[in-house]
Length: 371
Image (cartoon, rainbow, N blue to C red; front, side, top):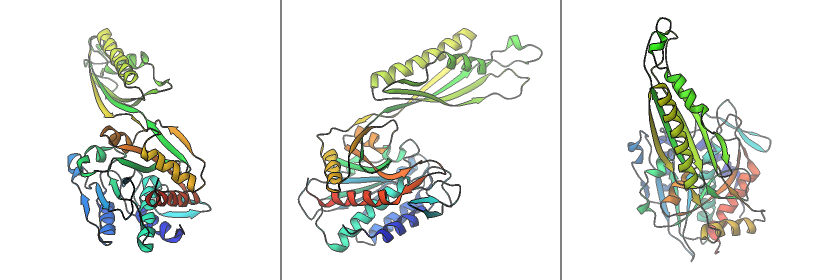
């Protein structure tokens, strides 16, 4: 493949300049829909965003195959984290970076650009290719709400490659943990802190006692737990009657996940009972774990494409979560590969251009080679 680097970079920078922070993806979705309609494709665009306050929708494009071979779905998400408005991408040596104090949005517009350029080269050169689906999701950065609200019956293909990994090409994410979210609300009793504090039950103290009883951070090789936010209270002369904290637990073992959540719940209930207060411990099952078999077609396609491009390969058991978790939970075999992006979700985010170009060639190889 003789990569058109200028067109690829221009396309990426054009997309980066389109604001698409989670829940505000409409303009980016419009751009992608127009891109494919101008090339003669029907575009399925759902109304998933209406279910959780986004103005965007997931997009699915079917590309009929012109050669034999198993179908593949290529996935990337169109939303970004904040600060993600008014991004101005600039080339700085071997990297693409943000000119200002925003993110770059290589996560995950580099994945979208790689898919578009790989297919554009195929289309303009009339190169035989497998049957493909392109699935672009919204609100991945907000608890994967786009993929959670996508109707998977619209996607008959059961093999997916997501271009949404950080780091250099060659890494294949083969597992990611399940995650539970926690909101623990402690309820005490108000009283004047200077006149009759003994008549109050301080919810902040209650929450503090609960957290002190917990094992947090790295629990074991498969499990982590973290308190993300604590909030409540008011004036210093009032015993606080309500406070809450948010937390998460991740694990590659569903049993360990359940046990850790239960231990945190027990700590909260013990602290509430000790002080004569109450606690409401709410758990959300945010995503299942996923494991990619090395015997699967998706894994073999990634490996074969890397090998053809002469790229050393390695597997990674991830600690985060993404669309792959959700789709794997729906019976789709998912692999996640890296695009050359680093320090994502920060103003130091950067994209290694040569690694990005390599990723695009790898995607092209998966589209056109028989494995």
